[in-house]
View (tube, rainbow, N blue to C red):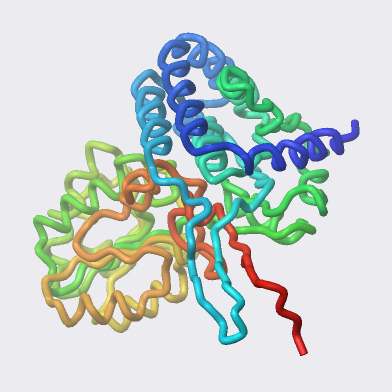
Length: 415
């Protein structure tokens, strides 16, 4: 099968989207939100077909799952994105040169944005909304796990586009076959940027094989350091939230690092995790404290492999350190540079931590669960970038734009 048609249609659609007004884009997204609310039974029925193919024990199951609460939240997010200021035609820089030339640097769409993602049908809504708001066409390559869900969602999106006489080619959903992935990786001249969302294995594969520019949305190997100065009550609440709110998301906690002076209070910190049946992989010092206080069937001695692992499950590693410097070294060795946190009341330690930790988002006395475009007031997100060029952290509208220079003269020639 030739996939060139999909890319050609996307490229042609991009020339039309740049002419859309923000008022029209707002109408499309609000129409889609209303359509989603009206079609919840349809979306859930299609989603159930995908869920039937996956074991509930699979860490991806929660990501694949749609329910009425989640769909209503998505509808609200669509309306939030619609209401956000347009990121386009913003004057980023302006100057007058001595020779009379007037220069303006203005924001413009990236053009055609490709997304490769796994069992996350909510991404289909998020990506479309953000891409449209930023004037971009999106080419989606979802996984076979979410095939029915994605097709149902795309059908609603295309209806909303056509309701305002916008080409439905502004959204392309590639077939689930692996060959479509290969074609997208090689869509030179048609796709301007490619963003993978999923496992570290998927992200590595895309980075290593793509011939078009890639923005990495990396895996989240997330730590929270409990300093000697920490408020244990705060730490207990934060650890519980960061670990158990949703274990399958990239901002979920994977490793607690605790100052050895607080080891006696570690059972207090992890006690709320028991009811969630969180399995703890404890280093030697923390194991000695916990083996009499935490259920034996949910406690094991940690192995080296447990540190630096994104569990995406009800599992947690614990590392004991002698000081903040040792904590910083551990994070530097194992972090994926996604989200890292410290619990401490000593402001000097907090300042040192925020300066030294190299991550897209660094938290002080709060949960890493907040690493999310919606929580950051962005309406939604295209992903969490762990790289440093172009975008870092939650990516939303500004990160889906580029810029161009507009130079206006009056007959000047260069000598």
